[in-house]
Every structure is written in C-alpha cells, then in structure tokens.
Amino acid sequence: MGKLFEDALKRVDAAADRLNLDENIYKILRKPKKQVIVSVPVEMDDGSIKVFDGYRVHYNVAMGPAKGGIRFHPNVTLDEVKTLAMWMTWKCAVANIPYGGAKGGIAVDPKKLSKKELERLTRRYIAEIIDLIGPDIDVPAPDVNTNPEIMGWIVDTYSMHMRRTVTSVVTGKPVFLGGSLGRKEATGRGVMLMVREAGKVFGLPIEKSTVAVQGFGNVGSIAASLIARQGAKVVALSDVNGGIYNKNGIDVDAALKKVAETGTVTGLAGTQPITNEELLELNVDYLVPAALENQITEKNADKIQAKIIVEGANGPTTTKADKILHDRGIILIPDILSNAGGVTVSYFEWVQDREGYFWKESVVNERLEEIMVNAFKDVYGMSKKYNETMRMGAYMLAIKRVADVTKARGIYA
Image (tube, rainbow, N blue to C red; front, side, top):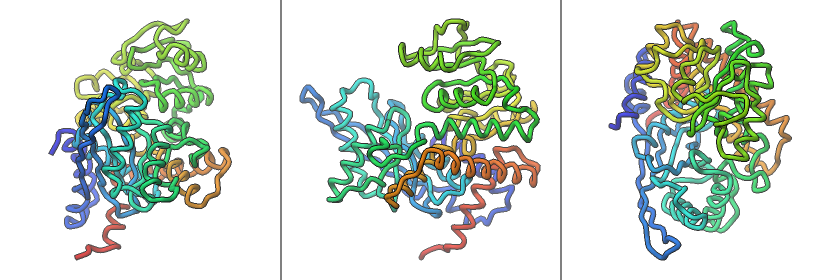
C-alpha cells in the first residue's frame, strides 16, 4: 500500500468508524475495484522508440460508470492514481451524481514531447485501456497537463475502434466536439460558490473578505476572478514561479493578462513578490490552495493564519495537518466538496452528449449552483449532526451514500 493511499484511507477509516458502518460493506469500500498498468510504446520523431508506464484505476462503480481524469506528469504512480480514483468516488457521491470514481495517467513529462509525439502517446494509451473505458463503463476527462485537444484525440481513437462516433466517451472536450458550455470555468466556479456558502454559515461574507489563492492555473485563476467579482479582495496569487501580494487587493484581470503574455503572474506591476510558502501563511479570511497535493502539512499547519481554507486542488492538506488546523479553530471546506464543480459539469456534458441536445451556459451554471449548494448543505448538516469537521462530514456523507447503494445492490456471487 502506497503512502499517499494509506494516508487518504485514514480519513475513510475514521468516517466509517464514526458511521458504525457494516464491516462487510466496508471491506468492499476500502479496496479499488480494478487497477491496470500498461506499457505505452511510442515512436518518437527521430525514429527511436520510448516506452512509458500508463495507469487506469476504477475505485468503485456502485453508483454508476467510473469517472476521473487522465494526467500526464513525470511523477505519476499507481499509488497516486489509486488515491485520486478513491477521492473521485467520494466526490461524485458528495455531489450526488450517478458516477463511481476512476483516475488515469502516464508517467511522462509532456513538455519534452512534440505535439505529434504527444498525440501518438495519447492514442496508444487509449488503445491499451480501450476495454476499460466507454460511456457506460468509465468516462475520462482532462487533468494535470491534459486538455480539450487531447480529449478530442481520445474521442477519435475510441470512435475509430468502435466504428462509430462516440463523443460521450470523455468529457472536457472542445464545445464544437460535444463539450459543454461552462465546463472550463466549472471547478473554479464551484470553489467560488463554496467560499460564498461558507461565508453565510460561518459569518465571513464573501463580499467583505480577503482571499489568497495558491495556484493560478485553470482552477485558481477562474476561482480568483469569480471571487473578486463577488466583491472580495484577492490579496495574493501564485504559480510555479512564485507569488505576488498586495494588501489592498490585486487586479485579477491584470494578472490574467500578465499570464497570457508572459506565462506567469510574477512581476505584476503594483505587487510585491512572495513565495508559495509565504502565501499559505498570510493572515487572510480565506485561503484557496489550488495547486498540487500535500501543500499544507504538519510542518506548516501551525503557521496558517487563514480563518477558512477552501481546497481547490485535490489533497492539498495532509491528515496530520487536518488535526492541527482543527485544533487551532481553522475551518476547512474539503476538496471532495469544494472542487466538485468540474465533475458536476462533466456529468452535464455526458448527459448532453447522450441526449444530443445542448444547454445554454446560463442553464449549466444554474444547475451547477443548485447541485453545489445542496452538497454544501448536506455536508454541513452531516457535520453538525455528528459534531464533526466539514471534512469528516463530507466523507461520512459520501461513504454512507456509496455503502447504501452497495448494500441495496447486494453482493453478486
């Protein structure tokens, strides 16, 4: 059992114990349903062959087809993919959408590949896992270093094998290829909605708050922009190159323009430089970690000064850090709730593809808000009922839903 998965399972164990979950049902929920490792040979532009390791994990499919992204990153491992697949299972259950959880990836640095090499890598990987995916089986999506163009290659590869066009095999596609309006903004919009809803119940209204956002990629940049439009003062932003700070507030539109022109927020006029580590420790109302896993750990949790943390990334806070933050009275809105906007609109995209009828962006956003607000209320209600943290409330809600479905379906033997 890998370290990341082992750490993530501690929260699941605690939630199951708190629920007094049927031990036999829980034995099923602790194990991934299917773990696949494939070799992905690719002909490089110079004629040489390189072989990459690819992964796809189905964690649980009791509630519906597996759902989860595909990431291209040098550090992808089975342990990471398995953990992310488990988080996807709980995330879909928290949002109460009819999906199970999956994840996939290839251990590769895509920046070192040409576009044609990247396309050949993608198509061969999909050919290797083609029996695992499909609209009724497992519906992939973009993740770290993958994008709508890559999803288009997946649609084409799958469709060629099926001998018919199957746009619903993935989500996160270009709109003209069956993608959904509002999908790009969905995760960031969901984060904004969680900041707004947290403000209502915890007495920190979004329009009067100060916010720091770590990570200015798709999720962080859109979350920051939408939060600023709600009247909040975004005082710090960061990306892989470093961070920027202005106690009087940053012009997020100017930051977006700076990234479009230079590829980084660093050096934005009217701001002072800070490190990613310093950003996490700023005295703000809301901290939104929207970068990678394990950013808040036992090493820095006692230095966090934010009143509320809203997790934009997957797994930015370790289990040990959770306890430290809770003991210090810091409220945390967990990833499986706060960044569920993306998978929710992915669900909408899948529904639209299967219907062959597409919705206005206003309809997408309205339905997203309804699901996210209901999920927040359900998690908050569970946490209050059991006098637990929002993290524990979210895990308990998700695990109970999956357990109830598993029990209702019975064990096939």
